Length: 75
Image (cartoon, rainbow, N blue to C red; front, side):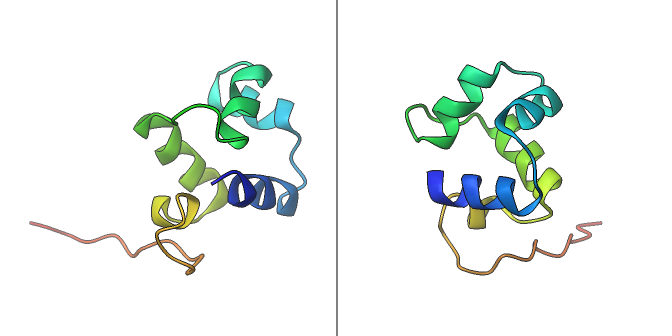
């Protein structure tokens, strides 16, 4: 996962510090997520997918498709 997070971050020209600030976490904690030294909570994955306009599946390497899933209306 670390390669994808770093790639997404650098494509947006964000620093580790900026992403950590957006997420409301410390830079050190974000680095652990990016380096795959710590499991990423679902709430953080959701926020990362929104920041990078991609799917959680892409971030966790379940797909090679970078575009986000279309939202479904279940009503």
